[in-house]
Length: 558
Image (tube, rainbow, N blue to C red; front, side, top):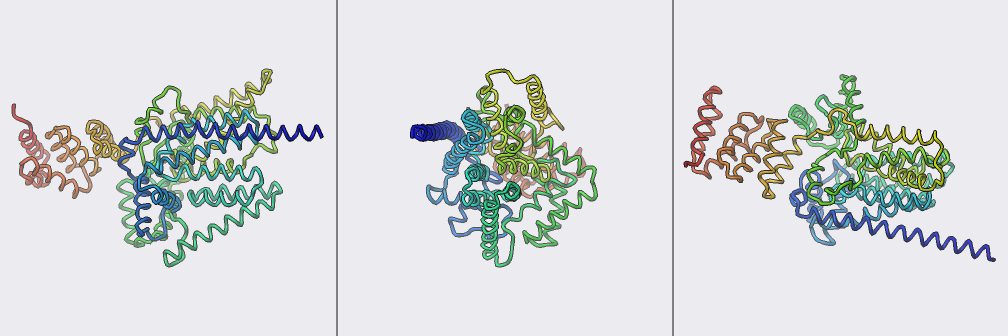
């Protein structure tokens, strides 16, 4: 009787400690995320949505207005409906979505701490949870209108449910994660195979049936809406093409002019059928591999290396620019970066006392990490695509803290040397500068950033970004327009006129630029016919003479 009572008391204490850990980690993570969301609320990136955030915002608005786009969809629609639900409940403000995501990501950190605790002990749980709470990319993506935070929460919740053999719940959560990020299908399929291999055939069957039924249902819904059989999402071919073509650099998702011309030809050939276009994208990417195997392999290696570096590479928004508006990202040694967590995880992998039998647990997160690495290498790499791998790294980072804190004596010399070697390799992978990754810029993102700064009333900052973009890509019509407008905001009329003239000489397409230039000359009382003279100038000398005339007319008289 006494022994039974003691065991019950021990379980009660353990349960209370788990709940306390869950609550503390959640509150710490929530406080940091709400502080971050508040700190960027008035930043240009938050006020003027661009690229994917703008697209999801418009998509959600269309859903609420009863004008949702017809499938097939280039990207999974689940996140657009999540945003629409938040708008329906609380008003059409992106700030409300960021706040909801702050709560969701804080819950993800708390569940990850419980998962780590169940694997390696109390110290590992605390360490994993608090490291996740302070992890910079998690903080950043809390404030982004992209499908990043929600699928991470669903992945961790599914892994925790499977840890306690709640197979139906694990299946539903895994299905939901794949509906937000379709590439996670690879991870969940590997997880099902792992369950069968480990003898959990009932769990494998439940998860597999749930996943299959869910995807059949989702495909049926979009097919009915489209009026024909179409896949749930059609973006795989496009992403494969963007990362595998003669002009690809492994990161930039904005096709240069030669690829835009190829895309136009494909549209003319296949119409605007997303399914046919996606198949064309996939075939073209595979043709690149067949025709340029050496270049394709070199690009593959570059993407692999860049996936492991400490820098958070951009996708469709300038991460470093957006983070600089938050005081949280200006603190010393805060928040935690990928490279630091990678080094801690390397230590945990070496020092953990786990047996080989349990070395791959939690397997769903292990499979998600491998999937992230494969996707970044095969398609193109960026911070958002590699985000699921951080979950796995954080679990092992927590085990590093558990292994070090739990040793009353120093580990054997061989283990110390092995851990030091692992940290050195991880540090080299993260903090070296392969292919000049530290100075890498995407010209199109600098244009977007400059435009947002100009609209926010910061023309001097806008000029810096726009001139940097044009130094890389002088034929960008939109960059020239915004540069001229920014200089006009600064009162530099001669600089604005010169930007219009330079742009008209350099840009490949000039319709918008011509219109903006004519309006500029009309606003300031000068003949818009100067634009026609500039375009018709027979020689560089004639243009220089006209430029001198224009600039002298625009300079204020003393």
